[in-house]
Image 1 (tube, rainbow, N blue to C red):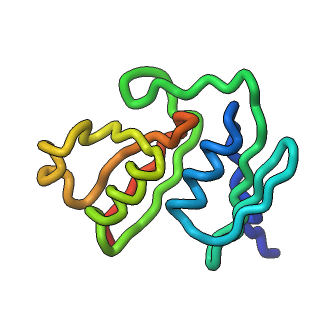
Image 2: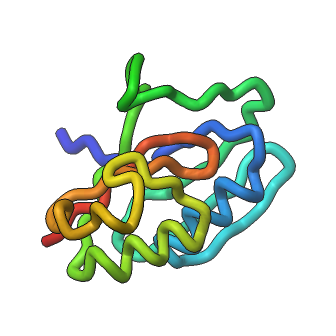
Image 3: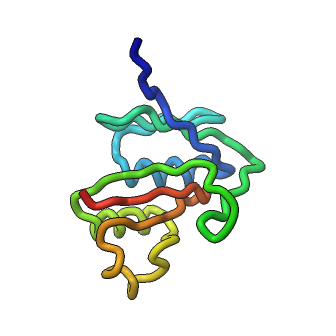
Length: 122
């Protein structure tokens, strides 16, 4: 028996902001429907952003649970940090540029809809 991960579904009140963010970060192609945006990128399961008008972002890591998070690896953490923040990510740890040097293997962000994800150096 084989079980495969077919898709990651991400709730967002603003489909364009959230799907645009993941598209800028992961590349691939983006198809938009009224209630779902579908991102296809080589080597990844489908990333589906679904409209959730009442979506409330998690408050993690300051409190509460994270609901879920995505770990992404990169061979250039600084370049990936610039891509993520330019695309709309908010740094959770480190919070600002002054603290980047202390975080050379792992950085934590929130997507525009507030979903946490990590960039990890390979």
